[in-house]
Image (cartoon, rainbow, N blue to C red; front, side):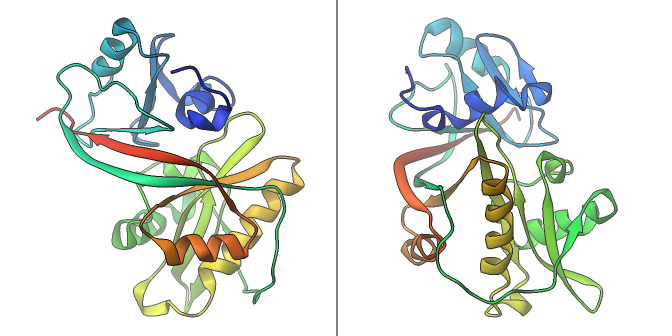
Amino acid sequence: MTPNHPLDRPVWSALTSRQAPLALGDEQALRFDPAYALFAAAADDSAEATEALAALNLSPNGMGLVEAGDLPLPPGATVRSSAACVQMVAASLTGGGRTVAFEPLGEADATEMLALATLTVPGPFFERTHRLGDFIGVRDGGRLVAMAGERMKPDGFTEVSGVCTHPDHRGRGYARALMRVVTQRILERGEQAFLHAYAANTATIALYETLGFRVRTPITYTVLEGPA
């Protein structure tokens, strides 16, 4: 399980660098505080590390593993789902597109952000996910109808995540416009932007490619059942 690149194991890379304050566990295995994110990783493929990873599966929401290549599952783990994904990276933005009026989102918007993410399911989103990075959103009549933001942050990289639009407001280019802003801000900090997409979602991948993202590697996203 020796990574050739920090993004081969983005969870471990994030929790052993800039997001270490959000980590639970020890040198054998780490997970995000469940109020922030579902993700966890073992240090390596040793029995000690995978057993330590199993001990971190304490949330009823379970635990998510995001890895390039094969990985050993914790002993006794029950797989809720496993999906083939791609990891995409952007070192620059390409293409154009419309601009939209947007605003920063923060603590005062947390309830609305969670409600929008729960409705649209852009990925695991919990009561403190909005604190993982900067988020921006579009409002219509005062109602939050679209948003995008940041999630995992290994050194030198920031993940674009939480991109979603209310079903009643799709087709207006909100997601693309917000992604451009979030990605541009990451690049202006001297980092690379990355994201994950289900491999079967070819239309979504094509959209990301128009923004300058390119597939870096296949990724497996595995969700383990939590305790009953």
